[in-house]
Image (tube, rainbow, N blue to C red; front, top):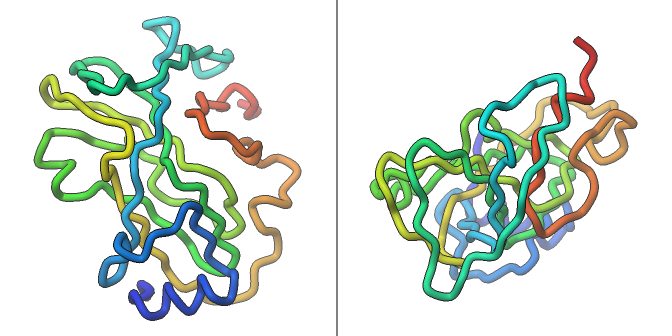
Length: 178
């Protein structure tokens, strides 16, 4: 079950959903619009290795915007910091973003109950497109959870994306055992 706008507001009032900064105008019928933060990152190496720490280089989106190029994976970040203590958050692209040929995530659209951070975006594009800091980039949808949670994400010892940040975070696949 997806939470409605009224239900999202109730959960914000209860503190089970936190969105900072929060602005009522970005609350949709059953979602909340999130915006592109000021930092992007790209990997230093063109060939990535799942068993190695692939380092990234951060840069700030200039006031005149930044042109994304096809064939490059950009890591972005949401302007909004979120906490979700009783629901499963999903981050999806907005239709307006998709119609510009921008994908905001390759596979990581679902968060875990207890996720407390900004969202790293895996941005790619179909053709060159100029993007801007603060532009609407996606929407959060919240699903109800059936059953009790044994371990919240932010309390897991092996959670790899718990460090609060306003910058995109590279893949931590290399921390897995395989």
